[in-house]
Image (cartoon, rainbow, N blue to C red; front, side, top):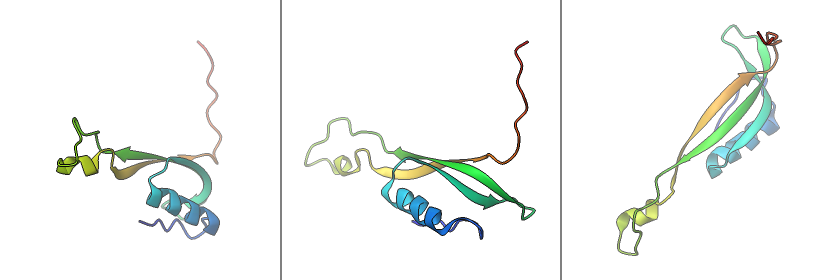
Length: 91
């Protein structure tokens, strides 16, 4: 599994994110990305691995036991940290 990033994404970050994706590890990364209009922006990428459910009664004869907690995929959340956020005031 690999991740290419955007043209201005830091090469060392592309390698680090790719490693986390391959190994199914959670992680948080600050990197550079591009919007659809080619505008560069700093962002934070959070990765959350999703694993299969544990087998109910894993045994050596149970074919599902090998899939107990198997890494299935990652959920990624990308947050734009380059723009100012609205001030929140208590009412």
